[in-house]
Length: 212
Image (cartoon, rainbow, N blue to C red):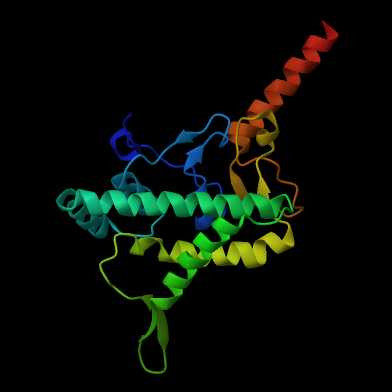
C-alpha cells in the first residue's frame, strides 16, 4: 500500500498540539478499524515537513540519508512508531483516568530524557540565549521537540481535563485525541467537518427510523 508521501496525503492537524498530531497519524480507532498513515521512514519525514518540524532542505537531506542507509532508516522508523504508540497509550489512559501502562511510561520517559539531554543554550545576541537541540546525526532528531511537547501534554494539559478523545470513539470509528481550546470547553469531536458531521447524520437517520 502506498504511504503518505507517495499519495501526497495531507494530514489533518486537529490535535491542537504537535504531540497529539503525532499520535493522530493513525486514522480510525486503534484495535477496531485503524488506518496507518505512516508506512515508512520517508512518510515520517513527510509528516514532519507538514507540521513544520523541518524545512524542505532538511527533508530532502533525510530522504537521501534513508536511501543510502535503508536499514538505519527502517530501525529509526520502528522506534518512532513504538514511541508514538506508547504516547497514545499514556494519553488515552490519562483521559480515561486509568493507571498508565508501565511499559509505555518507560518508553516515553526515555524519549523525553534523550531529548532533554541534547538541548543546549546558544547565544542569540548580547544578553540573549536560545535553546537548540544538538546536531548528532540521529535520524529521529526532528522528533525531539515532539518529545518535549508530549511532556507538557502529559504533565499539564491532561491535568486540566482538556485533552479529549473524539466522541466517535464510542461508535468505534475514530480514536483521535485533541486539546479542547474552545471557550466553553464543549468540543466533542476531533473535527466537525468529518466526525461531527458523521455523528449528526447518524442521529438524523435514527430519528427518521423512529418516526417512520
